[in-house]
Image (cartoon, rainbow, N blue to C red):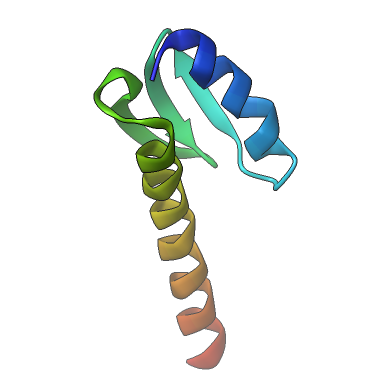
Length: 69
């Protein structure tokens, strides 16, 4: 992905409550989690899948914690 594509993706993800912090083409945070993802190594659909995998891990952890209290 280019920096322009990454910039265009950020508000789309924000509409789904997913916050990306970036520096150029580097993703530095996904919903508060530190990350070091260089977007230039991904096609847009691949990067979206990676971001959703990070969010999915958060959801699984939250469910596990809720079920095991």
